[in-house]
Length: 222
Ligand SMILES: N[C@@H](CCC(=O)N[C@@H](CS)C(=O)NCC(=O)O)C(=O)O
Image 1: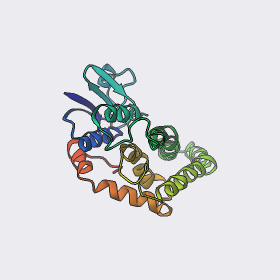
Image 2: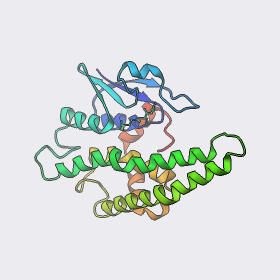
Image 3: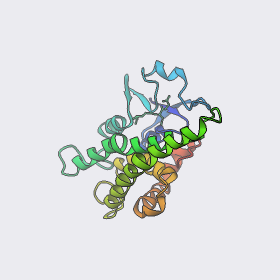
């Protein structure tokens, strides 16, 4: 049976959700983050050398990297319901959002998190003002403008149909859910992104999304 190596509160929630949408049977092996570093436990490196989640095992294959996992799962288990078939005109747009989620949307969101952690990290009192100043400058000159550029673009892209590809829900919406939920939680401009806000509300109502949450456990971004 297909196995999902699932780290709590992580991107692998998306994989559980996709499997629920596809109605593919799967089992979950759960891993807990180290509460102080937030890193995955070393056991995950026995599955894939990077030790990150998600990773799946299916029919003797190990597949890592969430975009590749989504592509693998729709290619193996979907019949054109959750992804345009290869060769269809919408397939390129589908591929675009699969890559965009991790390649373009996540870097500024991750930097935002890092800058906030630098500003609040425990350190000698005399270093605090310097650390806060550097973190603040990084945010105001680079992170926040890049984040606004990306999120306003995505918000506009969602305006026409509310979905990332065509007029129907697809696995690209699942792949984009993680950065969109993170954007709502930490971009600081959620109130200026009405189409993303509506998208996040809509996906969270899906029965398969809720089933995946029940199986995966707490997920604070969602
Ligand atoms: N781009 C990768 C990112 C994988 C990744 O960084 N996963 C995080 C969870 S959201 C992780 O495993 N963090 C724990 C660690 O780095 O030890 C993907 O989309 O699969």
